[in-house]
Image 1 (cartoon, rainbow, N blue to C red):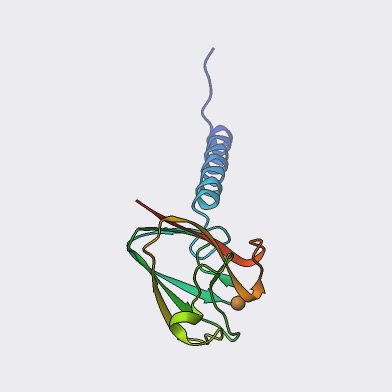
Image 2 (cartoon, rainbow, N blue to C red):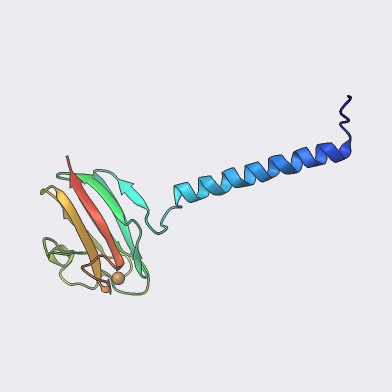
Amino acid sequence: MVVAHGPVQEERFLKRWLFVLAVLAALLVSACGGRGGQGSKIEGEHVDVLMFDNRFEFTEIRIPVGGSVNWIGAGANPHNAVEANEEWSTETVFGNLEQLDGDEAVLTYDKPGTYVFFCTFHGNAEGAGMAGTLIVGP
Ligand SMILES: [Cu+2]
């Protein structure tokens, strides 16, 4: 039997491939999460983390022992980053809990651990709302 490769078959073939490509693209986008999206991660020795209205740019931050995080106010509301058990706070370096757009607080972490942090205005110590996790590890 001879299979005809007319315009109709080619169009179907093309549509099928476009569908497959669209599915792959969707998977890729969801896997990457998108910069600044919910649940995005960053890893480095010295990292910048913007404090948006009303979420942290990164909700999982990994730094080595001795690394630092520059907590930067961004947006119209005041923000801060406070450890759930009050081990550390941006207040200690910035002077108060209200960091506005462009205000920076660099904290250096010498103690290894996994810390839940939150903004006292828009999150809580249970890790809800404007909150995240900082992992200071070897
Ligand atoms: Cu906030």
